[in-house]
Amino acid sequence: MAAFAFIPYYCNTQKNEVTGEVQHVDMSADQEIALGLQAAPEMAQQYGGIHPDRQAGAALERIGQQIVQSTKVRQSPYKFQFHLLADENTINAFALPGGQIFITAGLLKNLKTEGQVAGVLAHEIGHVVGRHSAEQIAKSRLTQGLTGAAAIGLYDPDRPATMASAAAAAMVGKLLTLRYGREDELEADRLAVDFTPAAGYDPRSMIQVMEILDQANHGGGPPEFLSTHPNPGNRIQELQRDIAEDFPQGLPGNLKP
Image (cartoon, rainbow, N blue to C red; front, side, top):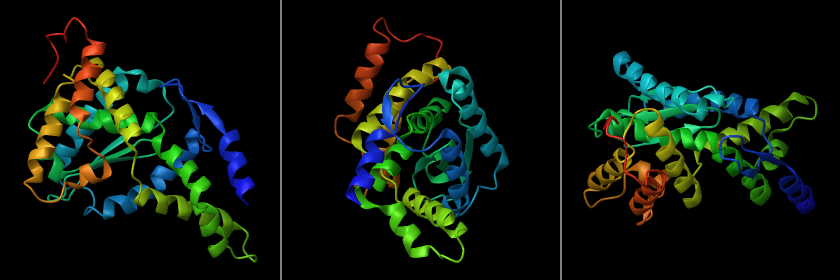
């Protein structure tokens, strides 16, 4: 059984056309899109559903699509949609595989500029095009046998179709508890530093977002965003370094804060 888990993981590799990396993933882009769409309603329900303010939701969609259409992201196969969640108390944002991106009203009300919103969305777009969820699912299959265990438990030999539905249910369950690693977070930050200026936004707004999130802590437990998005002590310094490397002569003066 170990061999059956080990061999597919190391044999199934795909080159990421956006980042240039060769990754251990065993899902196609279409499968990522389908999985994200399947998980989206349950994820939204956990945060009170979609916010009723359609104007705010439309603004979020506009900013997100501006990033997509102004960058190499538009060449990816993913179908991006941006959703404002009704939860006013939780500070969080997250992306599902395939392009479903969410931000809570609790986080949005803490952001002061359009550039800060763009920074959060660009970071989440980075997770999607970086295929971080697909990588995590592949690692989970290798180390825990998550999908196989769920399929065996739910499989009905008289109904072969339950095998596929059980596997899908296991993957959705994995998404509900997904945590990205430090390297995934830093890669999403690096991609966001590329994406935001291309879309007309100042990447330094991302540093402001980190400062806002730190202030939102107020000495208590960290905002959920920092729980699902690890915030190592050098993350601001990494952002500053990425910006300096991309713009050694300084940032253009016409970027929106």
